[in-house]
Image 1: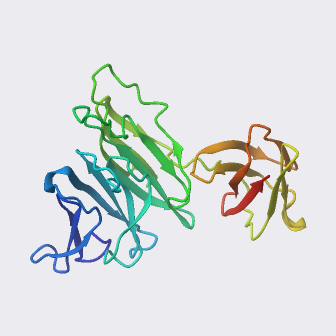
Image 2: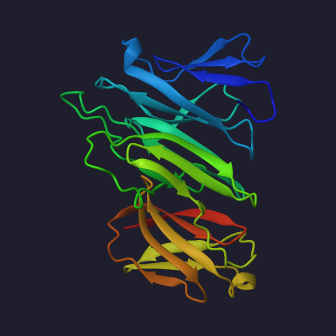
Amino acid sequence: MIPNSSIMFAGCEGGLICKSLDAGITWKQVAEIVITSSLNSVEIPRIVFSRRNPSIGYAVSTFFEYTSGQTMGGLYRTIDSGNTWKILSFADTSLWSVAVHTLGNEDELFIGGYTDLTVFPRIIYGFRLVSRSQNSGLTWELANQSVQWTSYPYRNVWMMKFVADQTGKDQLLMATEAGFFVLDSPSAVNDNEQQTSITQFKAKLTNGKLIIELPSNIKESLFTIRLFSILGSKVFEEKEVYGKYEFMVESCTTGVYVCEIVSQTSRLQQLVMKQ
């Protein structure tokens, strides 16, 4: 449901999404985000909407049969209140759960994977997958380190939901094949970072170094610096940066990267290239 409205969405078999404008009394199909010849091969198990911007929503797709040449699963996004949906990330990945809450000017997203091990000849990716994005799905990092998976062959993430505790702070609740988990502090932004607003910065990769240039008025602030591959994998992170803006990143291969700089109130990104 879109927050503070009577608009509801239902994810269906066959990759269909239906919309109701009257709190579920009547329904109309608005999207078929996964086109497949088999009705039972694809499902849309979870749809959530941003409280920061209710016109933005996220849907996950899971699939049970692989069809060559088709994008069969992943995370989809709408920016027009659910009328149209496009793939955002995790193409050809089977996902079962997604949760969203507000982090500054961004949506913080968690996704959980699903895999049916009986599918042959190709195993569908999604096995024990838990990932997090703190910039509305632009880049991702694995967040399954604390999940103690059992020897049971199915390692799926069935449900994720943000719930406020007694102090009003969001907790992430997660039901998995390995048990029930609570993440008390889902946001990784350092609580000690100063209230400094970043408006611009420059970054470059040269001679095995990541060099950051900040405006002179915020040189004495505390930041987190991250570097991601163009596919969203984190390749470098330095927390509690203070007065240091050159970092050794010799492991980076030639290519395009996303440099991110974060303070308590700001999050900016820039593309950088290593030749």
